[in-house]
Amino acid sequence: MEITAAIVKEKGSSFELAKVKLDEPKADEVLVKIVACGICHTDMVARDFIMGAPNFPVILGHEGSGIVEKVGEDVHHIKAGDHVVLTYGYCGECEICRSGTPPYCYEFFQRNFSGERVDHTHSHHYPDGTAINDNFFSQSSFATYSIAHKNNVIVVPKDAPLELLGPLGCGIQTGAGAVINSLKLKIGSTIAISGTGAVGLAALMAAKAASATTIIAIDINEERLAFAKELGATHTINSTKEEVSKRILEILPHGVQFGIDTTGRNEVINNTLASMAPVGEMVAIGVARKPLELETNIFLTKGYKIRFINQGDSVPQEFIPKLIRMYQNGQFPFDKLIKKYAFENINQAVEDSETGKTIKSVLTIGNYKN
Ligand SMILES: [Zn+2]
Ligand SMILES: [Zn+2]
Image 1: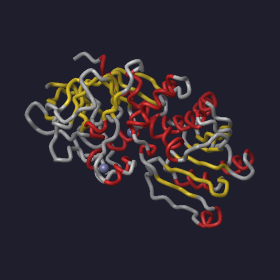
Image 2 (image 1 turned 135 degrees about the vertical axis):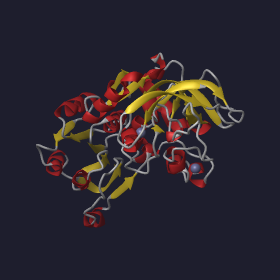
Image 3 (image 1 turned 180 degrees about the vertical axis):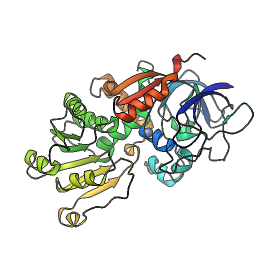
Image 4 (image 1 turned 90 degrees about the horizontal axis):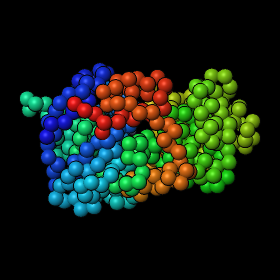
C-alpha cells in the first residue's frame, strides 16, 4: 500500500515527508494505522548516527500509537480494531526474554536498530523499488501506517486517550520503570533525579505515586525546575547556581537512598554518587556522548550499586496497561508533559524537543491528509 513517511535521507539531516510503499504484514506482524507518535531522544541519536543506529535513508519513530488494521496468520492475541501502543522489539523466545527481562534480549540491537527485519528484509520501498532502512524499534512509526512485530504491539483500553499514549512505549515507561521496576521504590524513600526532560519527569511522577517522601529534581533550567515542583518534587537544585552534593547533604544529612541519572554526563553522575546514603542505589539511563569516569573508591566503603538500564526494565505487556490505569486514576498525569504537533510540522516538533521548549512532542499523524 502507499503511505506517507518521514524520511531522514542522511546523517543529521531534517525529516522529509514522502510517499513510500509498505508491504503486507508477514505471519507474525501487525499492520497499524498510526494515530500519533511521540518524539524521543533516541530518534535524534539515530538521526545523528551516534549509537549503533541504522543507516540512511531511514524511517525513524518509536513511540507510535494507533489502531490495528490487519494481523498476520500467526497473531492470535491482537485483532483488527484494537487500540494499541507500540514499544521496543524483542524476540520473546531467548532465555533473557523468558527470564522476564526483554529489554536485554539477545536480539535487541537487531530488532530495534539494525534498519531491517531479523530476516534482513525491509517492508518500506521507494516507488522505484529501492529499499529504505526501517523496522526502527520494530515499528518505524513516523508514518501514516506501521508494520510492527506481534511482540511489541500492546493492546490498550479503548477509553484511554490513544493520541497521548505513544510515549508510554519508550520515554515514559523508561522513567517510570526506573523507579517502579528497577529501583523498586518503597513508601517513604528518598530519591534524587538528574535531568528534568520527559524521562526524568516521568520518574518523578512515579516516585510521587510510590509515596517517596523526599524527591529532589536537579537541572540547569529554572522553568523546568518550577514545573518539577508542580509535579511533586519536594526540592529542586539548579546545578549552575548550587553545589549539588552539598545541597543534597543539607536536605538529607546521611545522603539520598536512590538516584536516577537521565543526562549521561560524567560530572552529574559523580555528583549523585557523592550524595548517596550508604548502600544507596542508582540507575543511569542517559545516552553518554563521552566515556564515563567514576570515583570508584567510594563504592568500596559505601556499598553503592549503579546499574545501566534499558526501557525501565519493563515488560511492556504488564507495565504499559498499569501506567494507563495509574493515569486514569489521576496518579500519573503524564499528559502534562505532552505538546501536540501536526505530522507536517515534524521538524518544528523535533527542534522544540531539542531546545527544551517542549518536554514531549507528539505528532498527531492520524489527522494527516495527503
Ligand atoms: Zn529475546
Ligand atoms: Zn525512545
